[in-house]
Length: 109
Length: 128
Image (cartoon, rainbow over all chains, first blue to last red; front, side, top):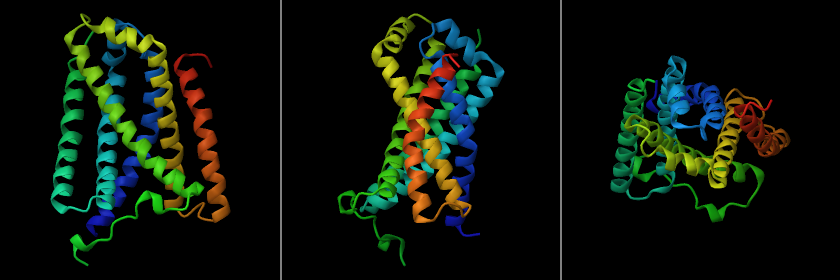
C-alpha cells in the first residue's frame, strides 16, 4: 500500500474514532469547567474519565498532526522551513499528550 | 514528479467565495483553534497535580463571563468540526457529492453547529 494511502486511511480512521470522543469531552468540559478544584480532580480521577480523556488526547493529536502537516504541504514553499515545522509539530504531538496522560494517571482524590 | 516540485495551494484571496470553500477554510482554521485549545486544557489538567494553592485564580477566570464565552466558543468549534467531519466521511463513502446536496449539507453544518453548541452546553450543565 502506498504511504499516502496509509496516511489517508489513518486520518479517516482517527477522525471517525475522534467524533464520539470529542462529543464526550465537550459535554463533560461544559459540566466541570467552573467547578472547584476538588470536583475537577474528582472527575479526572475516575477510571472511565482517565481512559476516555487519554484516548481523546492520543487521537486528537494524531489527527491534528496529520492534518496540520497537510496545511504545511499546501502553503509552505521553503523545504527546510517545512521540515522544521513538521518536526516541531510531531514533537508537540507526542510530548503534550504524553505528559498530560502521565499527569492524570497520577491524579487521585 | 519530485516532491519539491509539488504545486502549492492557491492563496485564499484567489478563491471565489462559496459555501464549499467557506466551509473548507473554516474547517482548517477551526481545527487549528481546537488543537490550541486542547493544548491549553492539557496545561490546565497537568496543573491540577500542583494542588489547589493557585486554583482559585483559574476558577475565577473560568467562572467569569469571559470563561463562559470561551467554553461556548469551544462548544461551537467542536460542534462545527464534528458535523463537517461527518460530512467529509460521508463524501469518502461516496455520499453527498451532488452539487445541490453538497450545498444543503454545507448549510446544515453551519446551522447545525449553532444548535449543537447549545445542546452540548446545556447537556453539560444538566439542563436537559
